[in-house]
Length: 286
Image (cartoon, rainbow, N blue to C red; front, side, top):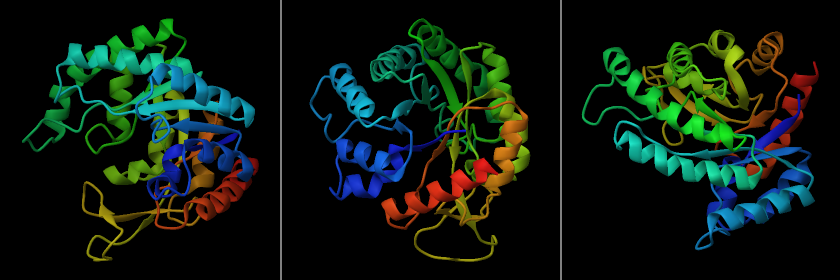
């Protein structure tokens, strides 16, 4: 397995102006990663034609000997009109194609506005969201881009909900971006959740979390899972996720793609990625 990184992992450096997008590309290659995925093209891309700028980014990645792994953007098929959202996302597929990205991850929904968004709400939302993903992935297939749902956003996050959606869409161009850490946000044990959805994997995020008991109050820097468990982003290998076992499960299911670090912890971005890269490389090699 090759090891990549999400540009989101450099969020603090980008927001503080320590690096721009081209600096992120260079720093990613310097650490040793061989692939990069993008969650946006700013700040360098601000005010520029996104298709033409995506082509520039593609060339910069090629110069750095980095493969472009995925294009990640937001979406919501419940808060927005489904047909209109499909059309908007087709434009994002065009950006993914210009980047030379083989995959695009877009969100499903954060849930129905002003509702509890429990299991009954999920069952109601499933055919609506499936219609949206179907329309996008059918267009993307003609562009050579596979589309994905990530276990992300609390509502469409559980492994069985991801599996049900993929089966409902029933298109070979649509699969899963498995974030091995994000299952904790839905209070699922990561190794068991990864085992369920591994056969659908198009791409994988290596993410780690520190976990505390539900009754604890750790303060700033933490958030709570859907069930109220405190979580904080961790350097890969430093948290509670059994990353090594998750990788073994993916291999057993036949996954041979990239492992892409998505770091969202409090530590310095570069140092966290250097340590995470070394750990992930060791886990994958073992």
